[in-house]
Image (tube, rainbow, N blue to C red; front, side, top):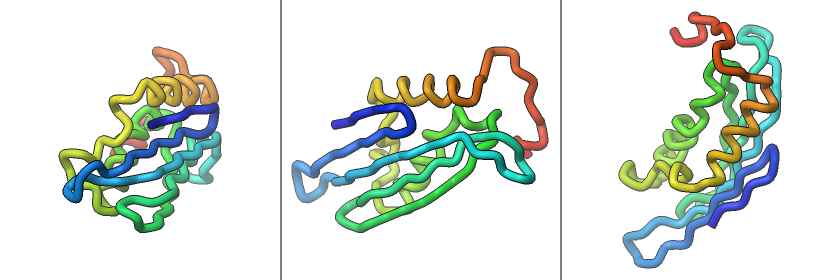
Amino acid sequence: MATFKPGELHIERHALTKDDVSYDITLNYEVFTDPSKGKGMQFTMHGSIQGKDMKETFFLPKEEAYNFASNVTKIAEKYGIPKHLSNIGSVHKHYDLMFEDVRTQLNMKSGDPIKPEHFE
């Protein structure tokens, strides 16, 4: 189950078998300016994975903000979701809504200039 509202994506899954995974995760985000990387998006992923509380915050510069799902996947794996199940939100239409909201909040447009140093 997933729900979306601007600034927040909530994804919940309950294990159906003993070999399945459970998580209840909220991903909050807001425009933030990092002194060295400039304007971007600050993400806070919190909740529980496999019954263990977790909280991680990460910042992505404007040029990289589209790639938030990669960070979410890595964090999910860090907290125990197996690699083959760690892409926890990619199948949800809610990720598309979040993607569009991130783009709108950062006023991102196709063809915007990028800073190559953010990709080093």
